[in-house]
Length: 145
Image 1 (cartoon, rainbow, N blue to C red):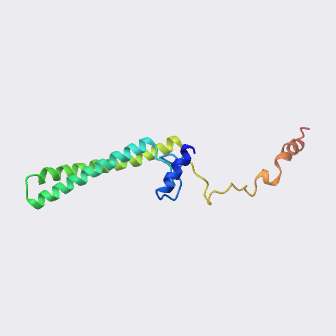
Image 2 (cartoon, rainbow, N blue to C red):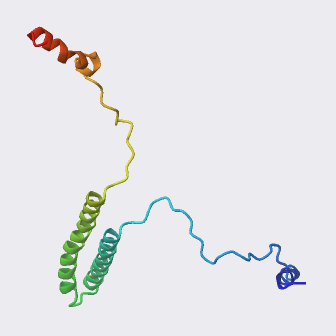
């Protein structure tokens, strides 16, 4: 008996119903619904989340300091106000970075139902078929045969 069949027999003896997977990898990738964000956009998003979380921590310290009546309330409140401005700036940075990325690298889009091919105008020469006849007819009228 070879080694693989011995392992299968041992696993069956221990009460495992399924045979072990021999060629399976530890990590398998599954497709996701949305593609990964571009690196600059992801970096600005992470930066914005970190700044927003620090702002929330500062706000909590200011609130608890005010409830306890300690000296740290005033500096924490000032830092919270400044951090709120910085966090707003960071969120706007994510938006601007995303827009710049889309403009520079293009966006894959499919036409919507509103996108229809151009209609020919009612009096256009291509629709009337006059474009081919117009040149020689004009020469004959002008007497330039």
